[in-house]
Image (tube, rainbow, N blue to C red):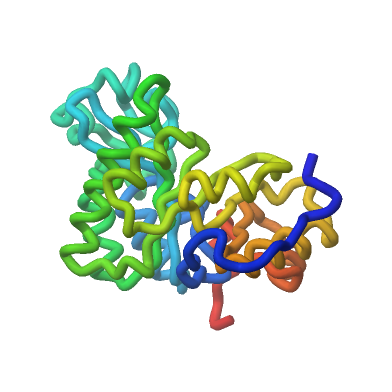
Length: 264
């Protein structure tokens, strides 16, 4: 359960978080396009989103590809474990037909290709490190290396946050690319959130919006802001709930509802 009282000691516990877009397209394009594809990222951009979120997992060859599940069946025409699949096999999959016929043949992209597209479109990125079991440190390091190369190629470091539920992955990302911002993902706010963020050198906390009330959000957001950090919430598809969270101090909200972007 979230703590009832969030202590707010002096600032300076960890470095400042980059500015967050108020709305962030979940898995690239929300429910409007096949998740974790270049088509999804383009859909989020066309809808007016300034920021997108997507997941990266390693192939058997150690290359980060965009995919959420440890297995291929749900979001592609492949089968078996992502971690046991070669780069060549993953690159040849159809990752769009499961969503709708309009996306038939949409490939499973590499992380490098996705970050290059985001750079060209001027998008802010939340990159979730999604390790398969047992590959936490390896995935964190590999994802951070690709992300660092993208920054060298022109993606602004201020437009990139690495996040993960796996603390070992975040620690490895920190060791590989210490200059990139990191966020800890949690389902429920831990009582020791401050210590965890400090240990990881993380600048933000991303937590599930379900179950959070105004008092908890305001205290947590204020506690993070006092240290230069940020609070983001996932995955919220109700416009009124999104509005409330933002009013309470949440820096950004992940959503599947691309129709909510609009001019505002």
